[in-house]
Image (cartoon, rainbow, N blue to C red; front, top):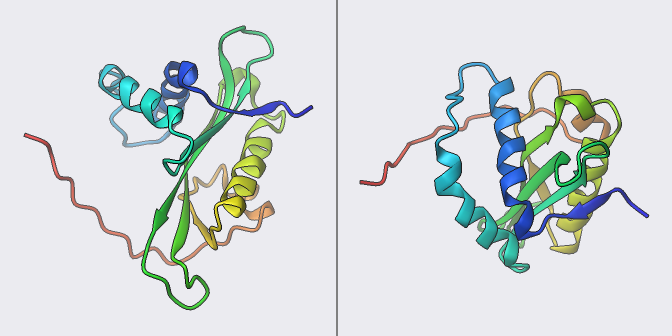
Length: 159
C-alpha cells in the first residue's frame, strides 16, 4: 500500500500549513500567514471537486496524527494546441513541500510520481514547474529539464 493519498477537503488546513513552509523557505517572499483564513474555503472547495483540474497528493506525518508530512499540488490548464501538444493540456506543479522533520524520506518523490501519473490520466502532454536549486535534482531525476523562462507577471488586485 502506498504512503501517498489524494488530499481531501479535511486536509485543506494542513495543505496551507505546508504551503507556508515552502513560502517561508524562499528568499524574498512575503511570509505573512494572514491569507490562510481567506484561502481555506477555496482550497476546501477545490479539493472537493474531483473534476475541477486541481489535485493534491499528500503523505500523512508518521509521528503526528492529523498532520501531513509532504504535499504536492498541481493543476491542468488548457492552452491552444501546438506541435508536441496538439490538444493543449498543460500540467502545472506547485506547492511541493515537506515538513522539515520529515525530509529525506522520499515523500516528495512519491507524491510527484502520483501527480505525474494523474497528469497522464488527464491526457496532459507537458508539465511545467518552477524549481529551486535545492529541488532541481529531484525534478531532473524525474525527467524535467531547465528551459529559458520568458515569463512575466501582472498582479491584478481585487478592489
